Length: 479
Image 1 (cartoon, rainbow, N blue to C red):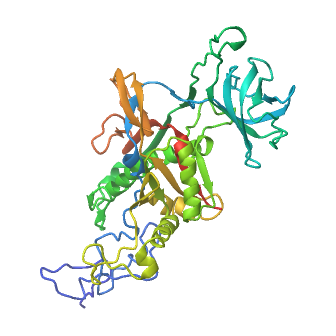
Image 2 (spheres, rainbow, N blue to C red):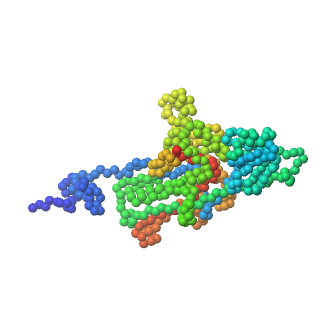
């Protein structure tokens, strides 16, 4: 009796031909333990149709690139970076109070605070402003108490009446020096002695953090060839699945290098702050030392208020706007309403005014007042796996970064150099560069430095972000 071939008795043929002895079966009931789902039974006539190429449904998934556009990376050798920033040049005080003195004079008291002292001299001429009602008065200083617990000075208003009589409030005043007025033949000794003013610098510091990641694959798995043709953001292409995973680990780590510099916070927990001190990132630096615009809706009135504030700071002419999608479209709408095309009809083109030209409804840059702004989308704020998933209260909607530089002395180079206000410092020496380290351990994939039957791919970096002149930065936050 002839033996009918059963499962396990498959006979291959020399030519592609469907026979009862050479076909595989596709199982829809699932495989057993250790057997892939739908691939356990070899009794089906046809093989499944398999797409080799991996579908890139999220496009380019990397988020880094922001710091490369606006900053620089420089080596350092210490555990801490300390820099100094200039204070304002002219003499002024906020939050002062006043009361009537002898005759028609007024006594102005300066609030005591850390680093604040009275440097106003006799015969200085001052302007006193009252923000509450818009009144102002001018006068000359007739007496000044310096170094006391409650520093104060007396002025004789030029109007001949006290500040109270002129309607100025008792508290919350601002005063600044605009010059001096001395009598003929006078000297600056005794009661007329001037106070020598020494510049006071404000120091800031930041510390680097160590960022690490690792990918591990066993020796057996490195020999397995996958059936998916993978392609990654850095150009890697092939069928070995562990290369795909290693490449994604590297790309994710490179994103962490930037995300940690943007999101970093100083650790204030006493038990761990010395072992894991944390680092001050961009958002934290702006919220502590910069300008925060809450519930910003792009319109000319609100934007002009930002410009007025920039006037009070460094007044840096060129600035970059990195925005999420909603805020970027809001800027486009704001700028469109100012164009004659938007108000009087569709603007078809710039050169030939042709209706067939592509209509550009976006703006990449604009000028307002004495400032130039260059606008771009920040993918980090749009990606759903990061800040793009947060909308509404306290969400980060964009940041204004000045395109300025500062001159500092670099101890490594031994010379003065100009650096962007925003730059990264990483640990490096002649023997070890920790900007972006990667190394293999184990006994697989080219490594032969341990008995581990696996390949360990290690990544490490030690760095921090330096945000100088943060008073020129603006952080846009949700309502």
